[in-house]
Image (cartoon, rainbow, N blue to C red; front, side, top):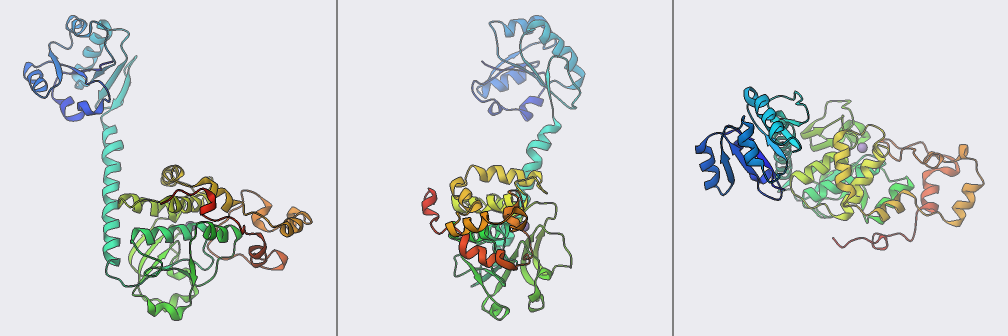
Length: 388
Ligand SMILES: [Mn+2]
């Protein structure tokens, strides 16, 4: 049904164009003949008359119309809506006004909503785009970039590193993803295996092979090798700052649940395609750092999560989260009480992440677990991955 717009002045022309109404173009009811003429020249249907007069409205609305949108200045609003109710008591009524005061039997959209819902998010996107451009420009002419994670990289770190490599448009050789430690947790080993992500172990001596250093999900002061770094090029992280960070570019957002969320914002702002593999990694990164958004998740995390959810490979995700157990490992598990089990199987909701390696001892040490319990058969290809 054709919507009807009642606008006694130019306001509507600036605020709402026909494009805001999908489907049939609206009929404009305006008070000035000159405005009607302008709308008609533009190809819109318009009638001019006294919009506070129920007789004019009844005539304009006869034959049954769609919803009525009133965008009158405050001074005329009450009279216009009263006339509409008189002329078409059953028509759905929407009022656009300067403030959010209610109007009986009508839905109200305050004009400030345009600032909040349209201008503000667009401003944030523009800011994020400028940040992404600056970041890419800084690494543009580097021959080799070191992407460094914490000592026992967790899913958020691994996904963020992969995202940074993608954002910079780099290969495994020109920007390897590295750690001074090693990946120990079985889910994280499974993540790298199934998503075919290569994480290299390096030591401080290897640092001079790189002409730029970027850290994700970690800060220089978190690393024992801190003294080997002067000023690093980039730090993107969500942990609270414990020591001042010496970096050319810093983006630390402690209110965020995951560094992966920050990376999703960069990728989207720079219009970089997020492949199914990258989306799966980032979704897992957010999921594990926020316990499925239950811990420390913010609106930004939720938004990134929702965006990635539609892109990710959920079969691969399931296989990462529940690595298949070998018969030997299952026998070992069933012979122990839950209390004696490793932390990551004692409760299905236990965190799979953490910046510092957990203590490892006894038969449940991560090394023992890694060699026996990761799924040998699952690969990216066997998870029904879409070609990217
Ligand atoms: Mn993290």
